[in-house]
Length: 245
Image (cartoon, rainbow, N blue to C red; front, side, top):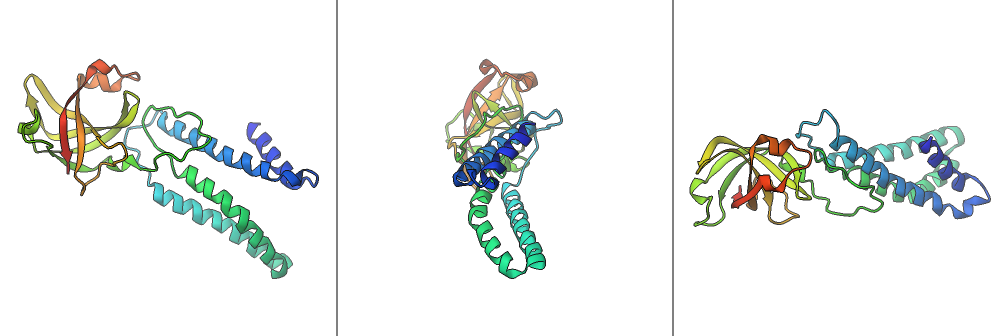
């Protein structure tokens, strides 16, 4: 019912002759709807009961798919008009569609290709979202080597170690933490570490092979600490800094 109401309200300002002077209201509604719809999709994916922590969306490929599909709709409309009414009608209609249609396509592609999947996180309704477009999930599934950031650091004597980034999670209102699984466990005092959390020091940097990225290394108190919906900060401790290669 809400979808039908929005659609009817959108059409009213375009199709009604008296109201068409205020056609820009239809476009404002459309733009706001794409922002809201993107947040609904994002929250549905984040809180799906079948989420397993390894959802990696290729946002570039998704943007291209959306753009090609929407351009295809315009071309289909043009061909149909040309066949039925001739090019004299179809050509002006195409140019009108390209003008405002291109403007609307920009917002559709922008919003529906900026889904940021983080297990368990709820995003607020985004009415204007031009925040970081970095695809942090590119790190998931990557094999990396952890090397010392400083020679005399606490963690340096146990490095280098290799492992795989297997999941992304939120900790202390920061959703850029990644779970790194070591190929072989390491022992630091009484701690038996086969998993750690890492997070890039630069909040805009994506962890990926080929780049030397300095990261914070965080240890945690058991698997249960990771599985809690509301994580207790006392279960997590900054151990040191390292470099991911």
